[in-house]
Length: 271
Image (cartoon, rainbow, N blue to C red; front, side, top):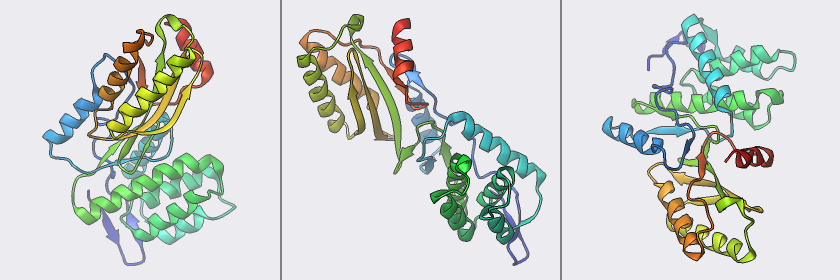
């Protein structure tokens, strides 16, 4: 991290990206039975002694996150000086274009300045342009990373996830189906609800949403980075299958997006 302040009037030079190897440490979707990318990521961070990381709390598609990073890097290479107060004025002006405000948000996020952070935070809480909601979300986490790096002097890691997270917890979406796509009976529904709630609570996994449909069910969950959530899910499936082997042991486990009913139906047709 190498920032340089030019004059006391808050004119700043953009010197370096606040992200550290964000592409290397991105997390993407994976299926039960494949390599555990979370375990590999934990191992990598442990080996490098990195214990500080940031997770985007909002649900921003991965490609939009990558667009933000590419844009940020482009501004970094331009290395053009700017004044904080001028950029704040642009951000809250009703007359500036969306593209100009994208630039302001990104520039403000690049400096270790509490005033810049608060301006981004205020804008993000109620953006004048709804189209910039995701962009301001990215700018807010970027600014937080820059401030943390400046204050602590330690390397900061950003974990990219389409589903974001909350309070150092990752958010994942899981899809489970029945064997041969047979409808769940009332008893099987009760078993599924009981066993999954028990196993996830035991594993300190927060259930945000639990929906049981005709022949499948979905869970939206939060868990800490060092938690092996996959083991808890496998245990729940195994317990349910003690009562008739009615669940498919293979399930979808992703942090990229929440599948719609239409997407799930299409996926089940292919399986």
